[in-house]
Length: 100
Image 1 (tube, rainbow, N blue to C red):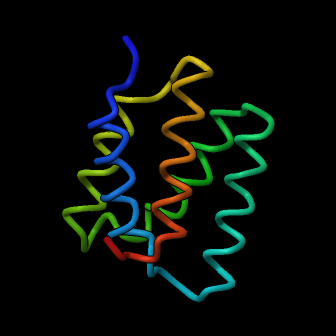
Image 2 (image 1 turned 30 degrees about the horizontal axis):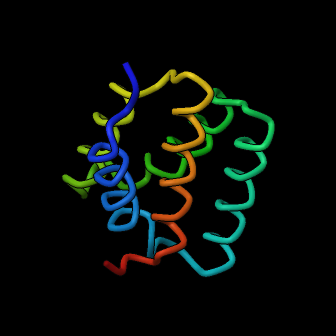
């Protein structure tokens, strides 16, 4: 079953809230760079590993981080076309910097 546009937007928005302002600008740039490389290689395992590593630091203190982890756990693994939609929405969420 394809991932709905509503779910993709929700993932993007929560990612923006949780990871959009985390760490320094350099940290976010490196995170985005690593995620984009995993997308380019169509490597869902690596993408998910990088994302979970970044998300892990916030699980204890953030209900939004826990919500994002649950949502991602229900979403991955994905067909290639859905992987691109979801993964790019995550990258856009990080790049948005917590802004709506």
